[in-house]
Each structure stands twice: as C-alpha cells, then as structure tokens.
Image 1 (cartoon, rainbow, N blue to C red):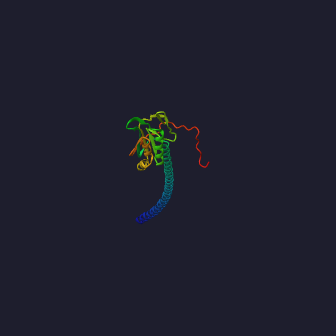
Image 2 (cartoon, rainbow, N blue to C red):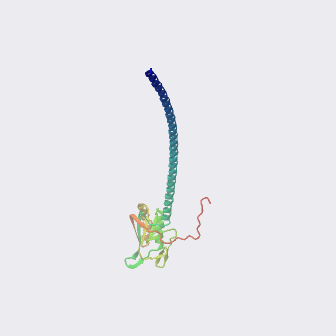
Image 3 (cartoon, one colour):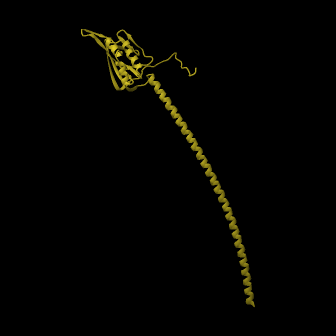
Length: 239
C-alpha cells in the first residue's frame, strides 16, 4: 500500500514537472519568436536604411559626374576660345610685323651697276626701284617683306636722302646692294618679277642689276620699333 502511494506520488510529481517543463518550453519559444521578429524588423530597417544611403550615394555620384562634365565642357570651351584668340593674335602680330616669321619665298638682290664699260660711275639704287619691287611683291601675294633686315610694315617709309636711302629711319648707301626677302608662293613671286616687260626688266633697262632666287625657307625679322598711334581710334562693329 505504501509502495503504491509512493508510486502515485512520484507519478503526480512527474506529471506536474512535465506540465511545468512544457509551459516553460512554450514560454521560451514565444520569447524566442518575439526576439526573432524584433531582430528581423531591426535588420529590415537597417537594410532599408542601407538602401536609402546607397541611393543617396548614387545620386551624389551622378551629381558629381554632371558637375565634372559641365566643368570639362567649360574648360573645353575656354580652351577653344583661348586657342582662337591666340590664332587671331598671332595673325595680327604677323600682319603688324611684330614677330619673326619664316616660310617659302624669294630673295631678290637689287644692285647698282656700271653705266658702261668705259665709265667707272655706278648707277645708284633709288627708292623708286625698291618701291617698284615691293609693290609687285605685294600685288603677287607676298605675306611678309624685308629690305636689308628692315621689316616692311604699314608705317615704313622708304625715301632718298642724297646718296642714301632711308628705310625705317635707318640709312643705307644708294651705291650698295639691297637685299629684299619676301615670303609667299615662290613660283608666283618669281614669275611676277620675271614676266616680260615687268619690274625686273624695268630695273635692268634703268641700269640696275636685279636677281631673283627662290627659297624653301626665307627668314624675316620682326619690326624692331614701337608703333605709337596717337589719332587712330577703333570703331566698334555696327557704329
């Protein structure tokens, strides 16, 4: 009898313990489920935040790329404008004789000659002879001209002064050889000077020697004086 009661008591205790364990398991399971749901929510929020940050970063990258593109276009346009201005400045300097230049052309020598075999007197070179040559060269497309290392520009004066010829305020003896260099198409310049009844023939007929030589590289010095305009004023286009 006592043994039966003891067994019954043990059985009841086991049942109670079993119920307690089952309840505890369900509680732990519920807590675990709640914890897992909370963690998932946290991870979801973190993921959404990461996505938002990624989108913001991508937008910033696109904005930076657009700014870089705008800057590159601006620099490109600035470079194009700068190059255009530089080309125009170089052109103006060439036209004004303010820079040393080189290129194909001709070298002409105008030389005083003996009047005849029995006379030792030389026929001097006149400024008229030089002007005739310069005019012919200009008419034939010469882009730059120099006489005895004097660059010919819009303000150049060539005139006689007794037995001297003055070019850009520099005096040269009319009884010495004058060297004229011109840059342009060598064939055209030479043909213009040598044409029948042309300038060379006119110089020879007046007792002046004249030779023309084509050259692949004629070097012409820059104008070495200051051009000072006192009265000329630029006029804007449309005025």
